[in-house]
Image (cartoon, rainbow, N blue to C red; front, side, top):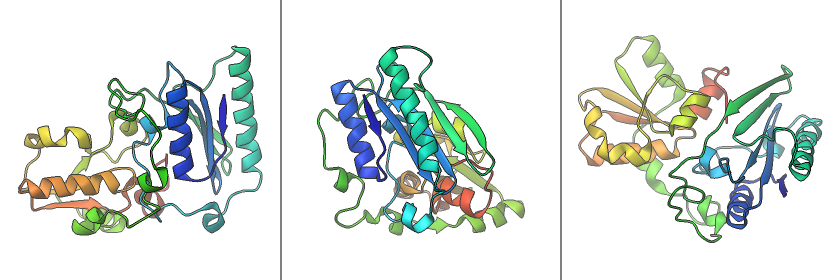
Amino acid sequence: IVADGTDNFPTRYLVNDACVLTGKPNVYASIFRFEGQASVFAAERGPCYRCLYPEPPPPGLVPSCAEGGVLGILPGLLGVIQATEVIKLILGSGEPLIGRLLLVDALGMRFRELHLRKNPECPVCGTNPTIRELIDYQEFCGIRGEETPASSDVPEISAEELKAKLDAGDDVFMLDVREPHEYQICNLGGHVIPLGELPARMNELDPSREIVAYCRSGARSAKAVALLRQAGFTKVKNLAGGILAWSDKVDPSVPKY
């Protein structure tokens, strides 16, 4: 059993893939400021970390704990939850956090639970996996070398600008390019077409309407905007920073994940 207490995305993806490839459960937890989350990934009957987070956020989008701060007792709180899950797995008793994501709000002292499911298209634990060995995770997370320029080549709209348009009653079509299980965690009421299905489902979109594409952090939706512009859509923009930016700058009640 692997208990992942790391604090960076390359190592989290490395641990996840190693656990899936070796068949070991990954008892996961992460913390930031006053919030934390925990789950058990890579178990035979449950999803893995990549099912929940198909892609890492763009470099620089998520501040480190040193930059953003973290409540001092939070590592202990989430660490105890991890230790409890490890013991349950060792004993083979109880109900582990497999297929469940526990969200901890220390300021409100609230615990919420989200149900997760395996993504059949997951590249490491899906039906037809494409990742069969460990990769360069620094490169995968964009930490080494130049970040992909896709997002700078597509028109963007900030969360505040989008909020103003919606408040003014502008006819904006919201396109959510995340996976359906992500939509269940939180959503902005958009029409869901996962990025992988977009090329085959463009007929569902009206090129005459103003379209704003969004995802969790803005990386996948930037790719979606690029695809749509190549197909002749001219009134499409990317929500800069995605739902994370919307939660930070417009509506804090929208949960982060």
